[in-house]
Image 1 (cartoon, rainbow, N blue to C red):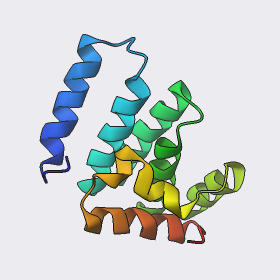
Image 2: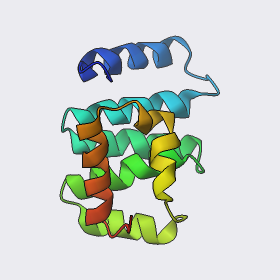
Image 3: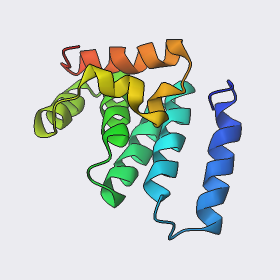
Image 4: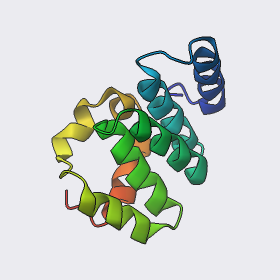
Length: 123
């Protein structure tokens, strides 16, 4: 995904989840898959996977960020605003520390930030 081939990364993560469906880190794999769909501009798919990651691990900040950014980038701004209003504040420094975000290309990280700003995030 970070090398500019999101579909390859998404496929490999999907395969890993098939091989180990009860893996305790499944939420991480789902978040990374979500980031791949976000990079590819498939915001609905990215949101679906981020929701799945949050269902498995409700405190996953990377999944929450990807869900909010995907919803607003896909035109579902009100849903994204509601999500941010319900959740914990997103510290701007968190975006540079989370591995699911930090290894994205700079332009993709900026798209994540833009999506968050559309949802009312103050950076």
